[in-house]
Length: 113
Length: 234
Image 1 (spheres, rainbow over the protein chains, first blue to last red):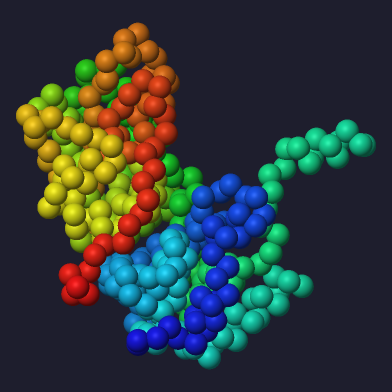
Image 2: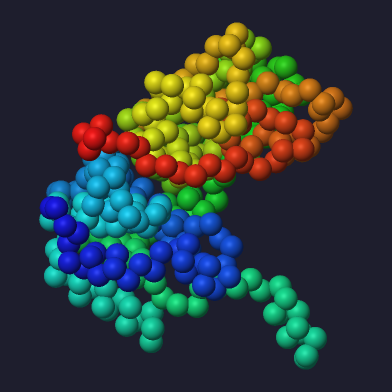
């Protein structure tokens, strides 16, 4: 893929990166609150043994390095880590663009309810 | 009541009062993985708890104790996993329910007047998380990983660490099964200090090897993270 998948492109465009959001609200935490959950997600994926085309630890990190240096070079850490992981899971067919798009809408609706 | 409200305003830190796309993306990915049976919500919760509670304090305490107790230092170098247990870290069960991806053998690299150690993972970003916490952002960058193994003195200088020519620099490359941490030498000016006092100056950067402990310095060096120059792009 030479472009970000559509659901990720919109997220990048809106650019709600932590440094910007933290500055807007006067928050001092250096990393966003979802970072430890992302760490848990990465560990759980690395630990997974299933039939899906889930990347191994090394594959996941190699793909993250490549994507963060190219397609997502404009994003800071850890947003680039998260988006690269989403990209890997989409590119490997672990999740589809359609289901991710739907789920993003559903999660936001739930959080804003 | 007015006073209570006043206290509340003063003590509660501000929060980002907005739902961000990245927060939504993390939840969406996690839920889809759980629904597909890749992992369970319980597994995710436990790994997240592990990520939240780890930090460099046990490693700092281990070094401080080793500085004060030669027998403990000998134990730390000969049986690092046993010594880790004495500061509350069980490498065989770091999460209390099974190992994350980074288990491993563990070794402690003791600096001497003639040898300085620094750790890296040239391949990815392997790091002794159970005892040092999550790696800093710069440790994960290709910039640090590629350049440290080639030009260690130059990279250390970028952290403000200039070593004399007669000090050998040993770069220890971690991998998925083997993790390291550095035991720096006790600095001058700490005579008579307690273990707690010494623990405070053993920062994460000292345990990686990009800084040396110094009385009065209890924070890490912050350097801007720079992207690696991609040879293919030039």
